[in-house]
Length: 147
Image 1: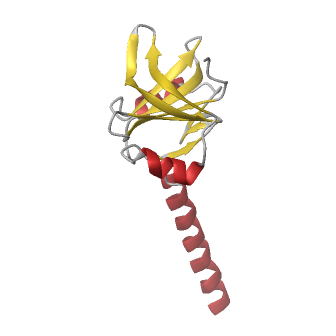
Image 2: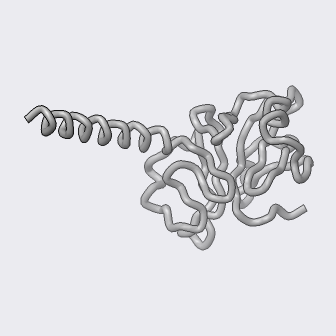
């Protein structure tokens, strides 16, 4: 009887742990892959209602396939705990030397989505910072950026 209760209790704890992990994953930024439930090169149209446009912007290709994600909110983070609002030097310490550093703005059609700034560009991710060296947005993509 005690063994049965212990197994039941462990099952409840395991299920609770899995749900808590799933909750935090919705804010995880993964270079080349996406952000939370938003997976690059997947159809995510149904997910458009799940995010605040002041925190995240999804760029679609052909109206359906997710091409890139731009993050404005410090709620979202990478596996190295990098977030919007951090200092450029913190990113360099955690990620090392970028593949390239250059001026960059992110556009969707005629609209500028991220203020013109300088970007630290790594494989599948760019950290855009302002004149005060503060990260103002994080751009996640899967194809090489055009120079």
